[in-house]
Image (cartoon, rainbow, N blue to C red; front, top):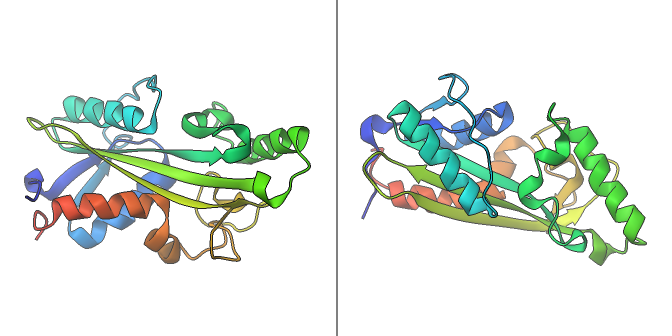
Length: 206
């Protein structure tokens, strides 16, 4: 049964311009009007859950309550196998208060070099995305997607955002940072979670 999206409009519960842009690109073909939490000057709730799904739900529900609109949130991050899944849900925090992901990428690389000789197996990593859709008067729904690959150094490419320049997905010889945005949108962790969301919204935006 399709989820009904009131007025085909929702709030993207994020103040991250790169994330808002990427989600907006995914929503546009559905005819859904997206407005960011930043545009509405909504406060950012403290992300104090212990999972991507928990933080996604927290952000979506807070944005929906504050705006009175349907809200879509994304909690995503880079999980490095050899670092026990770190930075994981703390991926943005590794970038510091100024969201400097150059610093965050350097920190990941330094952590790996401090601990290991860096065989290919020790560079395995995956991105996780949990999307939560909160609609007033309805239970929230969460969708999860993952994409696996390896870390490279130094960073490569100027596309994308966050850790994209150091992540090379399985089956590709280029990083997310080098990949054309349309190609990334077709196979990223966010795209895989989004495909599940689209299936639930099927017919609602027609």
